[in-house]
Length: 191
Ligand SMILES: CSCCC(=O)/C(O)=C/O
Ligand SMILES: [Fe+2]
Figure 1 (tube, rainbow, N blue to C red):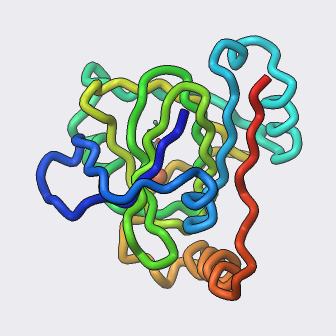
Figure 2 (tube, rainbow, N blue to C red):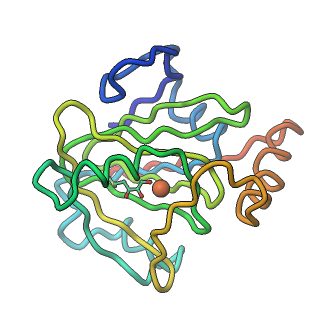
């Protein structure tokens, strides 16, 4: 199950955990706008009504799998791309099937929160959030990817403050947060 923490400021191996202050899942969601669900890994590959409901509710029309491991083509280059701080014009939706890794997301004060994901964890990173990904020392993660319509995987590297998705993210998420209207984003589905 997911764990989150503020990263320490050490500049050594980014595949080390870099644990600073630990925070709970709700704090992580409230401070970033990330949404979180948990689906028991034993039930994901079979008919899973809660997952089907989420896909219907969110209109996820595209679905595939990605495996990040040293045998993948252009592994080093891919890791570099994933770990370069970036945003997307659409949500990034990942459901971990096997393995583990780190999604790092900037909170509303621009501090790195490291989200350590495991099988069953589903993250929705909002469009416009600055983030990056890196495997942990096990160097293996397999995840489902979902998308609304034709997938666009293009990372837009920071700085991208003028990108429309960034502006919308800041207007909708940060303003609400700063006004004390915290975003209710944590939903659990364990069945
Ligand atoms: C475990 S999914 C690999 C990371 C990825 O797909 C992505 O787009 C990171 O930003
Ligand atoms: Fe991304």
